[in-house]
Image 1 (cartoon, rainbow, N blue to C red):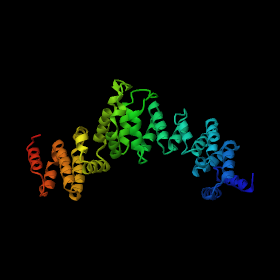
Image 2: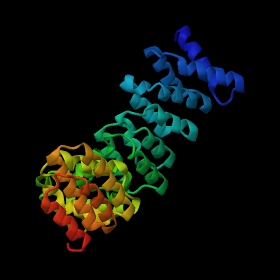
Image 3: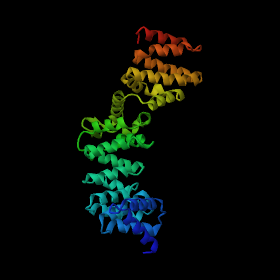
Image 4: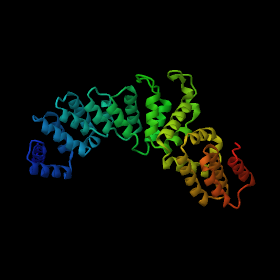
Length: 345
């Protein structure tokens, strides 16, 4: 061991909880700023696994995790994971799991019987589709309420999470599920980004799901997309319309001439589930886009607002005011508006 590694391990000892306040604070600051090389990583890994004092093992593992050393030196992951499984001290055990965060091996500990290990593994799940699918396997296999809550908070994070969650729900065989997965699936759909979730659900290719394999009691796999859309709609009704979902709906209608035609039934079901306040919000988002849209897109946006007015009568007056100022409004559209005001559906 070189003098540099000896100094490093001395800093670890000073930074441990057994040291005095000012000494510890200075050592922690220096460890955070230090650039760690290969020999440093090897020394820290050895110390994290074998140091006599559990406080030293804890600090060494925390430094490894802080600098994400395991991502740079994958050969250290296996020994650290093995040490985590054998470690008896709770703080050192959590720190060893933290040391391998953002690696695929962290996902192997998601269903660990010790909740502190599983919880740290959840926090350290790497940002990849494969790792997230393993995390969702653990979620459906049955975790404690605290760990389930951690996963539900986590799925709100990365931009890709909605796509990963929806793909999992569409394609998973739920082999590890301990009971009917419907409730857990609904909770996931309530926590992911609403706009991205709807886009992923509507974009799903039905041909991928046309099989008679049952995925949960009484539900064939070919029905999965329909059921997930129903769960999503229920979630929006309970949680309320998020601005990003309103913007996604309006943007898709503005850009895609076939969007309402392809997804009209699902859109109407979603609109019907909205509260009066959410209907007003969606109408205002559509109105803002309407002002800046070209003529054909305006017709599509006007049709969307008419759909909202038909399902949510409280928005009829607002829609009427918006369309009243449109000089090029098609006569048939104005007729629809008058019929809606009269309650003719």
